[in-house]
Amino acid sequence: MILTVTLNTALDITYRVRSLRPHTSHRVGEVTERPGGKGLNVARVLAALGHEVTVTGFTGGDTGRTVQDRLTAVPGLVDALVPVSGPTRRTIAIMDERSGDTTQLNEPGPTVTPAEWSAFQEAYEDLVPSVSAVALCGSLPPVPVGAYAGLIRTAKAAGVPVLLDTSGEALRRGVAARPDILKPNTDELAELTGSHEPLRATQDARRRGALAVVASLGKEGLLATTPEGRWRATPPTAVHGNPTGAGDSVVAGLLSALAEQLPWPDRLSRAVALSAATVLSPVAGEFDRDTYEEWVPRVAVTGEVSAA
Amino acid sequence: MILTVTLNTALDITYRVRSLRPHTSHRVGEVTERPGGKGLNVARVLAALGHEVTVTGFTGGDTGRTVQDRLTAVPGLVDALVPVSGPTRRTIAIMDERSGDTTQLNEPGPTVTPAEWSAFQEAYEDLVPSVSAVALCGSLPPVPVGAYAGLIRTAKAAGVPVLLDTSGEALRRGVAARPDILKPNTDELAELTGSHEPLRATQDARRRGALAVVASLGKEGLLATTPEGRWRATPPTAVHGNPTGAGDSVVAGLLSALAEQLPWPDRLSRAVALSAATVLSPVAGEFDRDTYEEWVPRVAVTGEVSAA
Image (cartoon, rainbow over all chains, first blue to last red; front, side, top):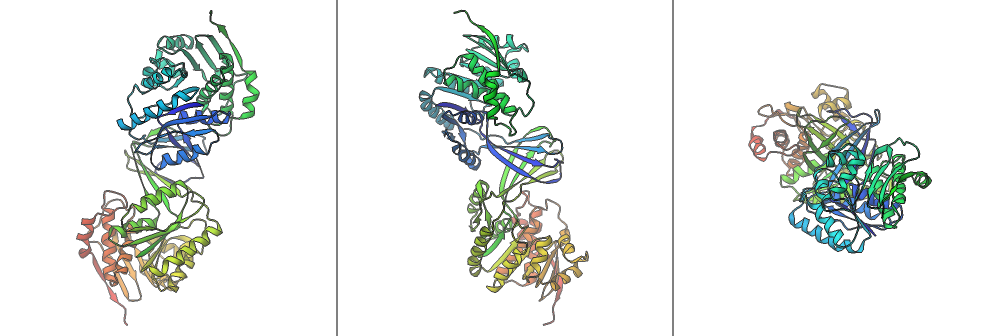
């Protein structure tokens, strides 16, 4: 069982319109809805890969109920979201059919009371001992900014490996609690370390506390700096498509292979293949299974193992 | 008990944003939600006036459940919506704080199967005999275009007065079934009759089947052409504000006074005062009770009673 944490859950709604023109009225051609927030996306990919996965975080109001209904419909996925009194936020992506561009509207998340935050921490402490890995994903709602650091310490105290995928101050505070894997993209890594040179930045991020750092370099694949060695994993060809969810697929690939106790090169090739299969999928945030299976053996992983 | 019918129910969501800029991302500052669709608005005003009111129409999916939760929280309002398998539509109004303008996104309504339409007709037939008046409000979802004509005939067969407030083909087909009151605005009346001259147009609408026609002339108040006589009702001063829901308040005022068996001039002064109190309310679609009570005796009603 893998546990993913999404403190800022959402219901992601996509509207297709001919062309968005401010201050006019539009008939929406097509509406799609799905649970959103990075940890829920990671969980869906893990479940599709055949893993048992538990999701936790917050849920509230009618939107939260909708999110939970959708999650429990996914085979292999267990809903352990914790109730809050405020409503789970919606995000609306308005896709302009003419230009292909998207306009995004993000509702504010619910407030989280100190009592609700305590209830979440207790639920999390109860879940952690029985899982093989934990992923802490996405931005923080209004909870203490050191929230991720506390959750990382809880996992480590239970001997469960923990991956952190966030940004800004939540990342800065979280990394100091020594997560097993940090998964930043190049912007997040540069913001954390001040360096735009990936190798130097991943090394710096390890000095700040992360045991291993897997930086996603976009089309160029992944760069991993770990206690076992340093690797670069690149897709066989450059992929073009919708990058939505590609980062979440990297996290799912790393966790999936970690849960199977595979060595780093296998974790990285799985993550790169999943990410590419997500970019190439016609449905945003989903992955194309054929592409994934075909690409895993074709990902080039080069690097060096650390001296024992 | 008054019955309002809303075949195209909705959840009306309003987002406040600084300024809507296509193809960018926006944080929504404030979210408000309420049940929408003309008949539900009319019912809310009637309930606020102290009437017992039953609402029917269609409800489906998570959005329908939210609409129903909100409705049952209104004192005096009874939810008799009929389930459909598709989800109730949402409408999103994006209010631009800088310009004050609104951008509207309307989801398509659910499809209604022949079996669902039959189930609604049966529920309606069961409700009608126990009510004092029926209002049929708003546009039609994909049901037979003669839907309103059938519902009017059912009410008339039960001896219950029925008001029709719709537009386009639904209005054209509905009026032929001889509703007791037709409540068009000037555009709807012109589309129905071809005449932009209100007095001529209301007379023409009566010839097409309506027993009484109450045309809303915007700031100029109401013009009523009825079997009992002809009246014009005008507010004491011109009002400036948000016209959202003003037409629904006219319907609520007419029904409320009809249920109390008040004569036409009293029905009209109530409708005009309610409409003005809605335009002047700081909250779109609600009415200001003090303005309403103060204005009822100040509405000027002039006209002539028909020769017996």
